[in-house]
Length: 450
Image (cartoon, rainbow, N blue to C red; front, side, top):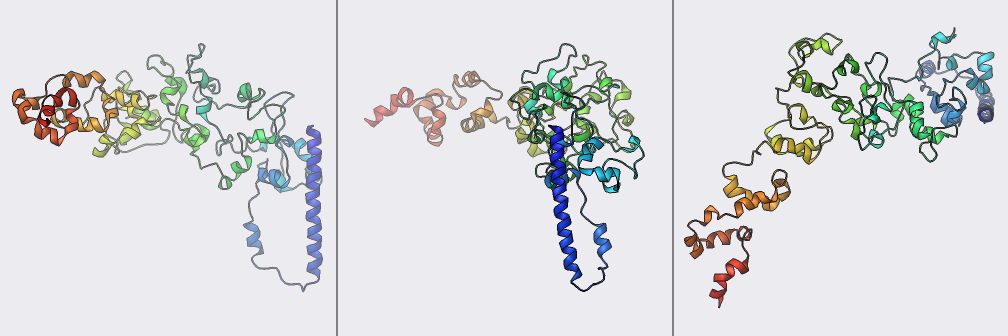
């Protein structure tokens, strides 16, 4: 099957080349009938600024090749694809390899011309750590909703299934075809990863022509380098060091990567931020002094000087925490990646929505609850938005007070005799919090109406 595809591809490219040759011949004949004129002075400049050549874009759009014409398995049945070699190129480029060696073709894989050996090959995959090889990926669709733990490793099974630590334990590797095939080789899976895979399956994850030329991408947005390589520039880090006392510090994958479980694409697959480190490296009393945030060399490879930035300390209030933020922080606190837990110890990193709020609001009185709140103000707010009250209070909280005679009703005899009239006219709704017309108002006012 592969040989047949290569043969068809060769015929296709030959046809393209023949058409180009005929067109060139016709152009040449037409030119002979015209008076010869000197070449424009800008010809060299135009040649120098010619459009760049994109390997995949040409072979996909102009040559019409399928992915498996060049990318073949290492061995039969394997999901690991080998680097395309001369065997994949010669069905179309036999003369270019064996007769008239062309630099334009050689430099696509080799760093020097003419090539000397396999030692001068460019890295493969070509764009690793510079552009994302996998184009579309959602962690949210792949995580285990039950958060089950692997008994052998003690980590979340859905994390360790795809990511494995390198030999030195510094970083974890990204999943590859072998890992993905565990699920995506099964019948009915999309995209399918097997010997029966088509170009459409490959494009379920990859956009090779857009990897080479991100400006032409329709979906891809410029990604930070750390989202591609999994590393920050000039920052040293080791998972192995952090996991030496994993139990003592209650560390798991999602302790730091708490936002990754809700990531739907590479654009929001972020690494932990500096403020996340503060939780342990600035606040933990059990951490040795040489691992504190004040010691720049713990994390930075490059030389650091000057005062410590505000984001390196939990003591300094973030700039976003204005007076207005105190009243209107619900949206920010409810986001899956909210880092409130760094300073607010009663909030968990994985908590969202109401749970994120409860950590603070169960132990802290809101700023609106002034001295007048209980007697004069809370009724109006409760009538407008009881859901907010329910964040901290339960139903019997209201009845514990409202079962008692309000202070506004004192002395009761005078209030009942006519003192209630003005309050009732101003806010009749508040009366019906406890009373009904039939069991209270009707006792007197029904007789008066007669």
